[in-house]
Amino acid sequence: MSLSKPLFNALSFYLEQLFMHPLRTKSITSCVLASSANVVSQKLMGHKEINQQSLFAYAIFGLLFGGSMPHYFYKIMEKTLVGRTKLNQILFFACERLMYTPMFQALSLFCLSIFEGKSKEAALQNLYTLYWPVLKANWTYLSLLVFINIRFVPPIFRVLIGNFIGFGWVIFLTMKRRKLQNQLDTAKNTRIIVTDSDSSSTGTTRKRKSKDNNWIVNDFFVFWSICSKTLAFVILMNKDHKMDSVVTEFLRWAIVPKFYRIHSIISFF
Image (tube, rainbow, N blue to C red):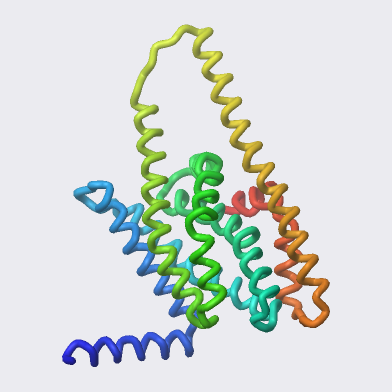
């Protein structure tokens, strides 16, 4: 009983803040959960000392984007798809999986590298290498949880539940990125003596692999564009729903998600 009252008071205070200041509360919650997940992942990987730079990167990303982006996305979807009909929930789920998630994964992979102090070229290489495997893993392991969140969770708690789902996802993402970084460090520290012909052929192979990775990303964003346009068309054709200018502008931005648009946004950094 002695512990139940403080916990109840803390929960009441949190719910009050979530109702009165939803964006601020969600951003701080995302920051805490992302940094905590990063610490857990580093401990699971056997690190004796916490990598402060990685911890800062995940904390600042959670604070800036982890709460705000899903907050506005869910808000726009709720204004667009009024009512909890089965069709609306299917469209909501499809938009989250095919429009929001690909954009958010690209942003997270790039920004985390930038916040860790890496160059823009290294951040883009990280994006090219990890984007498709990470996105496939997200679709495979999180789709059911996301559907449950959309189908059964009240709107005010969706971002909170999404952040708890993201806690496990951040652990996976941190370990995946660290594994890639270890492979790059090993390759950089290993010196292999080759002849001029071998080095030229190796350079050609590396260029081809890099080009192939770029084409995979580009082809996916073309596929993303088609799916986004189809979903946007279905939503716009539903005459029972009135959309305000914010929703319209979001859909205009979402239906042109080709890679060069993403690359131009990334170049801003």
